[in-house]
Length: 308
Image 1 (cartoon, rainbow, N blue to C red):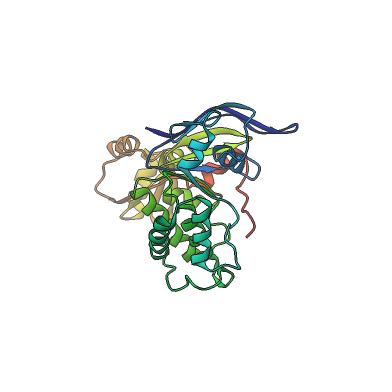
Image 2 (cartoon, rainbow, N blue to C red):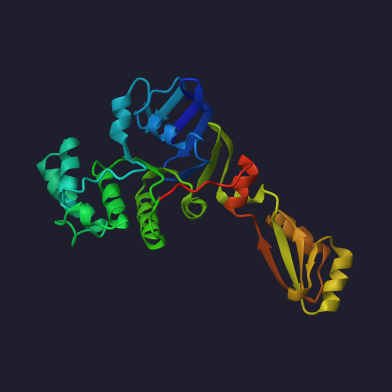
């Protein structure tokens, strides 16, 4: 089932086209990451899907609701964590949650139940009565996500949620995202941290110029990118020399290894080992390009880190 379905989406700001014919499908209960350089259209896509921006053309369904004819239904099904924290620093953590509960018209009974649940889930119980201005960046981001989840959304948009966080806080947030998906929530994630997409995403779409230039699992995208190889390790220099004569590859004499170009697929690996089945072969490892290589190959430029 599709939690999000986008067909031929277009949007421009004046003469500047930001989204140009985007097609996107996100399956229920999965994490779908959108990667792209600055200005690729990632945030605009999230703003359109969350009803904050009206597209120029295209058809969008979110949670089974048509964006054009049933925006209220879309808003009832989603939660949004934007690039910048929505936490009010003058309020305590608990007060921030109660404020959002009031805005969502949850009612007293639901609010009394949900606020303590979310404070505990995101390890904020001890800080619940402290002003949010005293929170660390990771704590503020966890509170921000807790506020997003107050209405039990089935679909959550995370727009670069870990920008500026330290590595430990980032991994804590990753764990929270994985827990959401385990509960059946669908996540659409935009990020410039390629490790984040590699760690979390079931599927990755690469946006460039408002278009989806590639899509697939992280492994599929890496296999399609040049630079992958299989490293064959040998017992001694003589065995390495014999292998060089039989197989095209790049030798590494210091490591007694031969790097053979390959997409890393099981079929390619099996074919290589069928060609060279020698008792002097002591090790085999597969090296595929990382998502940095994918990003560069597909967009023609290195990724640009968003400033903290």
